[in-house]
Image (cartoon, rainbow, N blue to C red; front, side, top):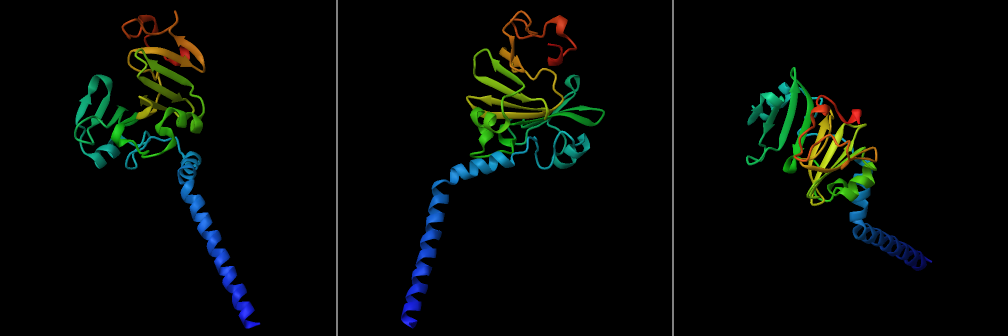
Length: 211
């Protein structure tokens, strides 16, 4: 009887071991898919860097990052070259308060295989954008989600920049195609920009809301 019980116990242990190994194999084989789904459902549409975001103050940013590397008083903009080569963080400020927070390339918080690193993944996570802009040479795209005041810029289908805050036009340089809520605005006679990419005089002081 003891021998039989030992055999049953051993068989049960082997069975549990086989099940555990099987589980580990399944997880390992499907790890990329599991990670993708986790990133998708835990994604928070917020542009942030070291705890700083559009709700921070200029004082907060300078306290953490030091004085800006570049200032544009005419555009109310201040920039930091976080990687010591190119502008990585740019903010626009009014009365000490940030109203636009922009991150570029290496400063972006989403790394490696995150879904939003490609346009297909972004739409899978966020859905179709409210504003969609494409450059004339088709190399740059921007996807804008108005409920979050957030926009994502892509070059060659790779996330290149993210911006959050006040949205006026949310266009790309040398805009070729521009859509708002699915309606094509450019190219058309109602396109706010001329052939040189400059805002037409009659659209000065306006925004996408006036289309």
